[in-house]
Length: 414
Image (cartoon, rainbow, N blue to C red):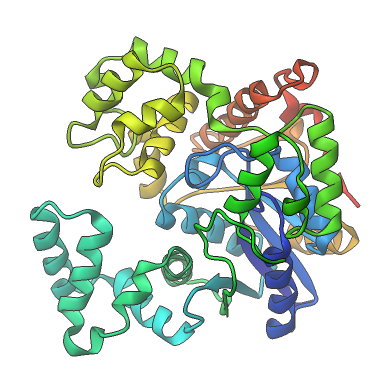
C-alpha cells in the first residue's frame, strides 16, 4: 500500500481537482489516497457552498479513498497555519507516504529552496525581514523583499514564486514537512488553464470561485457550471440545492456577525486574530452603519486590509476564535486529530493501518470522542462543533438547521 496525501477545500469538487487527483496518483505511483479537507468554513473566511459531508461525498465519488476534516482553527487561517494543521494530520496518522500539491510554477526544486530558507530563518534573512516590516510593509511584501535581499543575484526568478497563491501554499507544505521532520515525500503538479482567482468559466477546467459565482447567480446549478464539474459532483450539488441546504454564502450570517460586533468595544475586538493597527475602529464603524457582511467589507477594505483578512476576522468573531487560543496552538506545534468525514473500501484499509500507527486520535463518531486531561484538542473540537451549528443556520430550509449534527451524522461510506 502506498498512500497519497492531498490537502484541499473541494468547494465544490471540480474537473481541475479530478485532474489533480488522477495525475497525483500517476506521478507518485500511489495505490490509495487520503484528502485533508476544510470543514464548513474556508481559508478565505467564507462558508462552503454546501456542507462538509456533501463535499466529502463528492470527493469519494470522484476517486478519493478517505476524507479527513481539517479543523476550522486551521482551515480558516493564513497559509502557514493551514498547511501546518493539514500536514500534522497527514503525518500523524502514520500511513501517508507522499503528498502532491498543485503549483503555478511546477518547479519543486525552486519551491524547496525557498521553503528551506523560510523554515530555518537564518539570521541574515530575519534581519532583512525585520527591517522591511519596520517600514510598514505587509508581511508578504516584507518576506519577498527580505528573500530577495538575502539571496542577492540568485533571487531572480525565485521571488516570483511567492507571488502566486498555490506556490505560496506549496512552500508552506514543504516548510511544514521540514519542521515536523516528516518522512512524507513531496511532489508537485503544474496548474494549467483556470487561474486561482478567475471568476469566469471558459472551458471544462474552471476555478472553484467561478463555479460558485455561477451557482450563486441563480441559486441553482447552471448549465455553465456543469461544464466544469464531474457528473458525480453535479448529482450531489443538485440534491443539496433541492433540499435547501445550499448554496450557503457569507451574507446568510450577516445579522449574527454584525450583532456580535455591535456588542463589542475596540479593546474586545483586539482579542481576535489579525485585528491590528487600528483595524478594530474601522470594523466597529462599518458594523454600526451596515447590515450585511458584503457592505461592511466594502467599507472596511483598503490596500492594507484585504477582503480575505476581514472575512476571516468575521468568522473568528462568529466562532469565538481568539488570539490566545491560536498562540497556544502554535506554541504546542499545532496539535490535531483525524476526524473522518467520508471513505470507501480502500479508505477503510487506510484507517485499519492508521489505527495501529497513528500518533493522533482518530474520530469516526463525534459522540465517542474522548481526549486526555490538559489536552488542547477539546478546544479545537468544540470550535468544529460550533462551526457546524452556526453553518446550518445559513440553510434556506430550516428543517435541516438543527444543532448537534456532528453528533448524529456518520461518515459517508461508499
